[in-house]
Image (cartoon, rainbow, N blue to C red; front, top):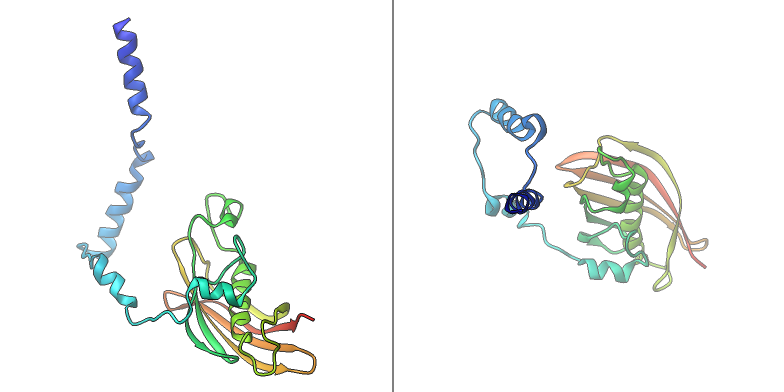
Length: 202
């Protein structure tokens, strides 16, 4: 009886232990990193965090909610760091592994869908269009089309998608707006769109 209880307790305790990586994956990755970079030199959390200290938030996520009607799980602009009303803006989308779309795109190889990268830029453009001269206060613009879209690199969990959009022209009479956009990860172009078309909701 005592032996059975002992075995049961050992089995229960092992349920809380992290399993050893198959084939020593973690050890292998660490060894490869050292081999590629020589001796490891760490900057530390404070130094890495300070890299963005000069980037100021112009509009917080709560402010963005006042510009746009989009809500979870379809709100794709976290904050705006540069803004010129009715003309252009730079916005941030923090991509995390908790995004709903990663459940199916793709299992074991999570990549942010390209159409959602485009939608994120369109939402940022919506924030810019809120300040258009001649647009009705509180106007909502529907995404009507996109031309010249090119994806340059995958966007994955952990990436910070830095988006830049600029209004090209606005036809007040018909409520049609044209804009262009680009988005970067670590300073590298990830996606660009030559022209997005929006129609003001009536």
